[in-house]
Image (spheres, rainbow, N blue to C red):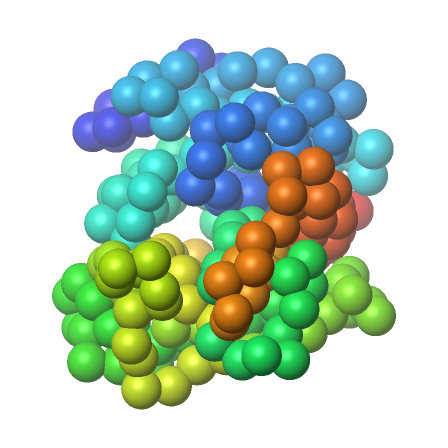
Length: 223
């Protein structure tokens, strides 16, 4: 039995990972025909069910930060997950990256946690290509800098490179590679470089768009 997750139903080989358990529920309602809770433990809500595309999909909350996400991904691998797409949020580091945009992560730089120092990790090439295709014109390619603490004094923490900053993507991609999983990521730009924020309704709609593309990409071998 995994150390953190306590599954109450089978876990699919394909998964969408989100930090927020509320977003996990919202995407389960959006993407699954008959959502069923698969994990109630530790507030890390997980859901599973068939999609309109046919195959089964798991949608799993990972909590806040890279360490939590890495541990959850480890449990999911033990439970049979083989492909996963992170659907998260990020803060723009470039003024021309508008809030509400969907950032297709081409690489992530780890500025916190194990590795640190800006170590570069990449998504799985085949899954990343499927995600790029699924996003279509919505796609904004970029580099994300992942930090342990995203804000210092209300502003994005300083990093040496990147188009946007978040707290999980480098850890998820790195841990996925170590586990032999295919992992990629799409991020909603929820905060602009000047501090402007996406409102809750707009963020939810952007998450649905990102989730639909993630589902198409991660399920592509079985659809």
